Image (cartoon, rainbow, N blue to C red; front, side, top):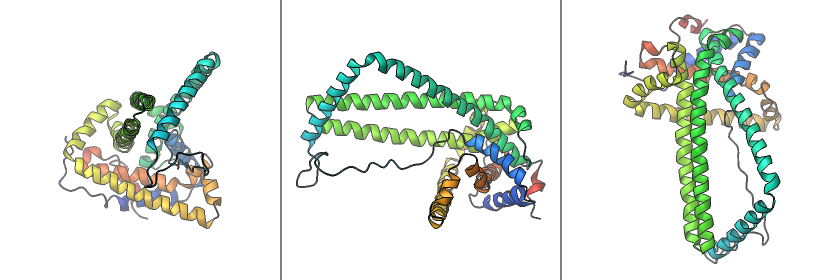
Length: 328
């Protein structure tokens, strides 16, 4: 089964996905069911990277680098400042090694433990939320126990990907810092800027690859595991067989999903502005915000499932429960 299909649309899954949202959450409306499914969705979203601005508004005055008459920064001054910074930083670290090393080790251990816990819980949550959407049920205990082996396999896969990501980022950052520091010490300002730009481009490329891996894992690999009761690596191999012959379609899928989320984020921002940021504050409350956004999350989960089933009956997770999406 290679998943080839004569016709695949990114638009057609919209209607059944909306119908499933209505059926699960509004036919009939059950507040208790909302909170149970919302809890599963909240677990599934734990540890997920959040968007946010980096700010970076620089102060005025003479604290920043001077610019030449044509608007370009003075590379000699930037190089001099960088040389002084690295020299001071090295001296400070050497003088405070007795407490910097223990604090860094303890902090790293705590961060790793928290990261592992969030990854483990969210791996369980992804199958729990998927179960609720597919079965139209608000359940916690049943999917928690039923998909334990699936979630553990997903957890291991995500840890491996996360470690690869961490190593790649560390290597890229260290390489960029060493190149920048060496160039700054030698007075080669142009080389220093080139090093920073190269690291920045590399980080963007790495971020795109990791985004696609995370998205395809959640949207398609997890449902394949759900269907086949197989490991994450085996499900990924099956999905890759489909992806390789339908790469253009999946690129369009990702772009369409980005367009959907842009519209959603615009509506959320508009709501926050209309309510003088009160809505944003409420949506920012852990778990409560997830419950309030549950229609969007159920739609997103349903849309990816209806898109996947276009590649053949073997990818239809709704095969046994399709009757629940019929409009009433």
